[in-house]
Length: 245
View 1: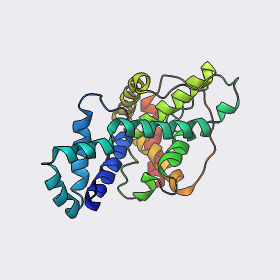
View 2: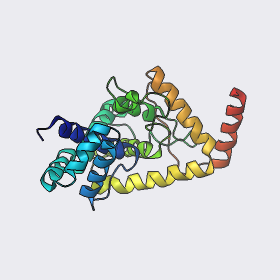
View 3: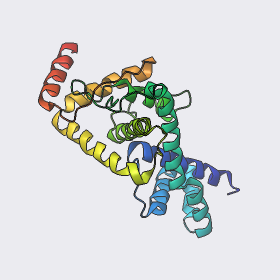
View 4: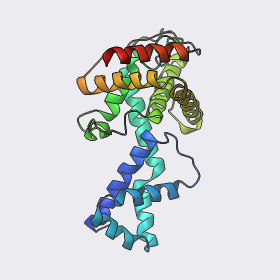
């Protein structure tokens, strides 16, 4: 990849893969990963006329096409993002400093205020809102890293991974084989929130975005429960938003 344009296409494709893992599919299917990788490289190159003209030439060059796919590398990209996120989770979640901390202190679950634990905001900021974070670079308007369910599901998986490690007394690998099903479960729950109490979910993101653009909040813990009163949450959220109008 000696051509500057080709190198730019490779870098653009890698960024597109990172974006996909964060905001679309935290644990991409193992089948046809090369095709997904190539599709994302193609799509990202369309955003620049010069790169797209070069891409038209590359499409007929199987060797160069393979090099681009290898550079972007879906498996390496997903492993990289999970590694970055779990490292930040292990640092940020204070229960790691207390080996006697009960596993029942679940950072992601509170019946009175589900999804509003500061763990979500802290990890969003640490991973995507740092000085060079992808989320921060997108700006406030139309930011695809916010109002996004897959990114919340990925963070929830990282938190669960840390808590499981606390319970076992040693770090747990943030592996696809174990946590892909967790991500799918969290996505189902978040979709249920989106369908049954959309206003409440909107307030969750309103508070997250306010925190992300203003600064740091300390982590806290809450007792978990698997039962939520969606109707009450939605009603309360609507009253709150009406009061701010």
